[in-house]
Each structure stands twice: as structure tokens, then as C-alpha cells.
Length: 285
Image (cartoon, rainbow, N blue to C red; front, side, top):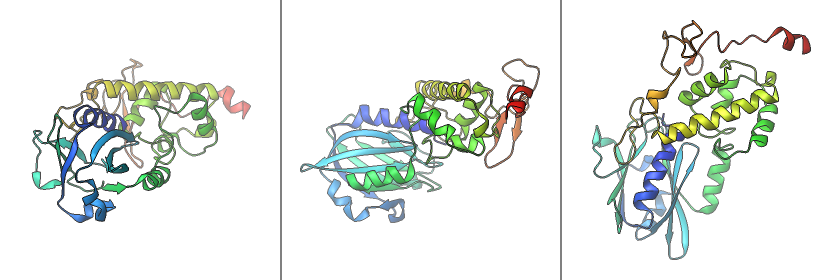
């Protein structure tokens, strides 16, 4: 947390409020919060913010200065937030970077990250390309249906960890993997190589639907997520299984939601998301 929908909401708000602004100053409170490129921080002073993009769970700010483009990439990690100046924060000592702007609707963008699992990277274009290649697989919102089917058919292992493997599919974390699998009626531990093409197609449709619905709701504020303007996402109100252990299955099948402990907690209905292959499927294997 945050995941792709939350990162997309952050990118949208920064794009709306700060694109076209000039970076007046950039204060870095602790050097270890910048993973790469700290010696180049002075280059950004006086640069214009040209655009904002999302890559997986990261947000990239594109700056232009004297005809050259460089990037500030913020990893949101487990607890990272990008916040405007007026947004109040708990424990302000965890604001590690402040970027001051002129000629914009907002005067400051802050990077708040108490657990520091995320970092900032200051990159040129070649560095950004390396960063993206090293860290991110396909984007679940832009990958085509055929590409997604081919990607899944080439993989083995358990389904939920694959959905959350950032170098394969970038941006899906524990919350949305649970919701996507419930909608597709697939067990988190289902073997990927057992999925038929039609089932993978249904998984693709559910993935797109869940992520887009979450973005339209401002994301899920389960613990500490706030958008830059301080608003909370309300997709949590639409979660069907995440965090619902012991509650009745929303499909009204008569069973309750179970919690499966593995790498990350999985919430699923043992009836709707059975991990047993049908008799006809077993005979055909």
C-alpha cells in the first residue's frame, strides 16, 4: 500500500496542479532518501515541470531546464506519500524532501515516508529507461488482452504471487490481487499453467475493471494513504473480500470469507474460489 490506483491518483493530482510550474528550490532532509542522482539536485532549480507519469507504483516528474529533460521518480513503497503544502501530516519529521514551486496552483510538494521503504531517484532519460526496464513488467492498464494471455501462458507457479510480481505485471499489490481473484472466482494458489485461455481473458477483464473502478474512487485508504490534496480514497467501501475474514461471501453462496496466510494475507471464499480442478479438466490433463 499504496498500489497502482493510488499512484495513478497521485499522478493525476500533481499533473493538474503543478504541470507548467517552475521548481524554485528542492530541500533534501536526509541524503539516504535519494537512491540515485543526489549530486544533480542543483540542476532542478529553475526547471519547469513538463509532465507527470506513473510507472507501476512509482510517480515520475519530468522537468525541463535549458532544453534538457531530467526526472524525479518517487517510489511510494509501503508508506510513501507525495503531499501538497496545505495537507497536514502526522509526524512531520518524516517529510524528507520539499520541492518549492512558483507559477502554479500549489506552492510545495512534499515527500513523506516514515518507514523509508521507498526512495527518490534523480535520473536522466537513459537512467529512467534503465529504471523502468529493471523494475517494471507490463502495465495492467495498457497491456493488450492478447499480450496478457501470452504472458500468463508462458508462466508457471501460483497465481496470486504472479499477479503481484512487479517485474512481470507492474502495480498490483495485495489489496487488488485479492479483489481481482475473487471477481474471477480463482483461488490465490491456483496453478497458472492450469488456466485456460478463456479464464485468462476473464482475469484480464476483472483486472482492468477493478483497477479502473479503484482509480475513479480515489484509491483505497486502508491505513495511511492520502492523495496530495489530503483527500482519502473510498474504494475501501467497495472491497468484496480484502479484510473481510469471517464475513459472509458477497456472492451469497452460504460460506464465509477465509484468510490464507502465505507471503501476504489472502482473503477468499472457499466455495466460489475452490482450488480443485473439475473432473473433466483432470481427465484431460
